[in-house]
Image (cartoon, rainbow, N blue to C red):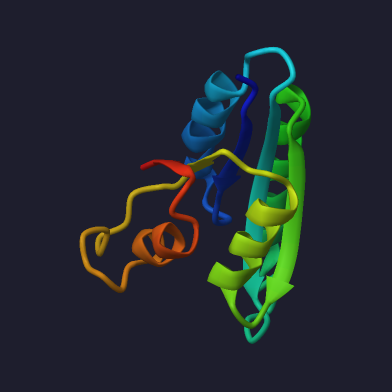
Amino acid sequence: MHKNVLVCVTQQKTCERLIEHGAELSREEGSSLYVIHVVNENDKLLYNLSDGDALEYLFEITKEIGANLVVKRSKDVVKAIVDFAVENDITHIVLGSSKTQDTANSFAMKLKKKLPDRIFIL
């Protein structure tokens, strides 16, 4: 079974391990790997120079492994990711761990509710 893997990242450089995990999942022939970073529309895309460096870093990593990097702006980050997952027939979603991972209101739980038939890797 081919996989369409989506790795959700922030601008933190620690995202490299998430991207590498996504690359492992998508190694099978016919699989696709997408890396998405959604910026809240109310936030500035580049707060300072280090944000530009972080995006450049993401671009370099994704290019090296042949992933598609997607950067979007949205008022609703969860909806933007859900829409992208549906449009691109995403089968697996890789997320970083969050301090509020177990609460019903966490980012991961919101995504899981809207995409119940996807496999989540936290």
